[in-house]
Image 1: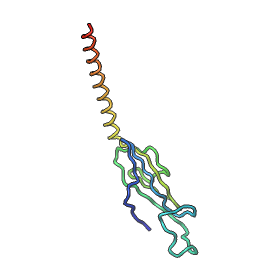
Image 2 (image 1 turned 30 degrees about the vertical axis):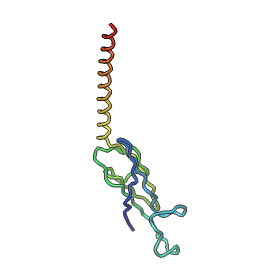
Image 3 (image 1 turned 90 degrees about the vertical axis):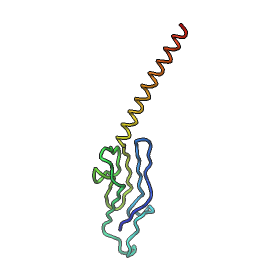
Image 4 (image 1 turned 60 degrees about the horizontal axis):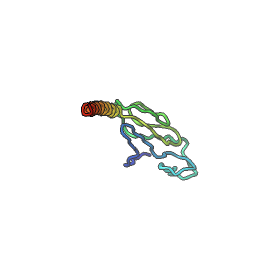
Length: 126
């Protein structure tokens, strides 16, 4: 069985992104997306293998935390038995670099502007 959920599970804050996908699999205590065996409770499947994918990642992105561990390094993909409840936290390093440069430029501009204002005030008071 397979399917696609056309909904965003990602939250972003600046260069940091967080993904929490829904529970997929077969457990007795949770409401799951994947249905039980079509033959009913008398003929359950011997093995339940589940896989989830959150899409691919750009090459420069850095995965900070992924639970359970990812199946590969180029995408947000998980595989396991019985059920999965995957989550990941990653950083867009290109956006992080732009933000750091912008912070440096604003700090330098404020420093120069502050020193010009201070010099003008001291000249005026003299």
